[in-house]
Length: 360
Image (cartoon, rainbow, N blue to C red; front, side, top):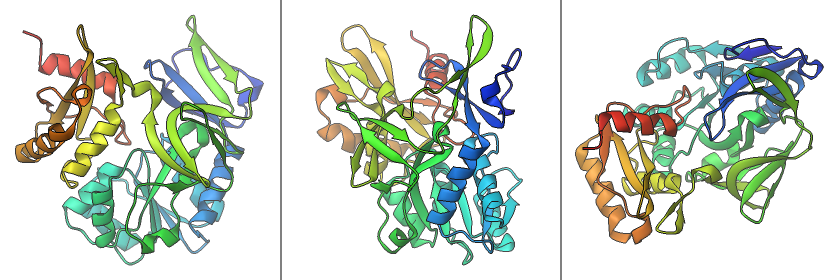
């Protein structure tokens, strides 16, 4: 067994954890836990992705994600499963250096997060000819940025996945590169079965599913195996003809003036209204408790963002937003707290917001 993350205390000595890798994660409460993925699950995922993207022994996977995350280790596992080369971008992320590295190393396949794609587009960099596919995970890549990337030759493919699924559950096909970029729907990989509940919650089943969680109870870590062949996620989705359209996490929904609101959907709308000038991960809409309304919605932007881009997108949004979805005056912070894969850390941002913008 191997763990990505430091477990405080003794690692559980459970027979069910033999030949497993543990990945640290956090639930909606922020309580740490570890997802246990068997080596068989990781290899099943790798094989499915390789077949889906036409990876052969002549291909080359390029690693530009942290290996302690399932997305990064997944790249390594795919190279191992295919018997092809693996190249590692062992530098601090920088778009121009990354582009030169891809060309020099002859990388054919790689995985990136939306923030990295946005950096490539903003720099106006063209993709090297060797590159055949970029799996974009870890968040939503908006239509404008995705199309701008394709116009520069970057073969971006939207994907949807999670740690509990050993990375990808759904990924766009290479054939879709001939069309204009659309962030959804995203075809399921053949190894997965999926269903959607009456309240739009997605559940999945397949050979790459996690074995269970390692969690702390009364200060003692123990392994809790998964008991059902299906895993009910916290993600809302639409499922049509074996293709997924992600709708955001259920645990981000809040009540404003008695109406359910999804802050993530507002973030995606602001990116669209800005025509891609606002990059996902550089701003957020945070729900703060309010005695009268239940919650108020505060847009928070990194201070380095061009003020005109912020004001333009907000003005367009406020024109048509109903009362319960209207935003408060924007706040700013030096940097939005994000995970190594660029995912917004909402609890950390709420704490930072109180420090940077204390109540009078």
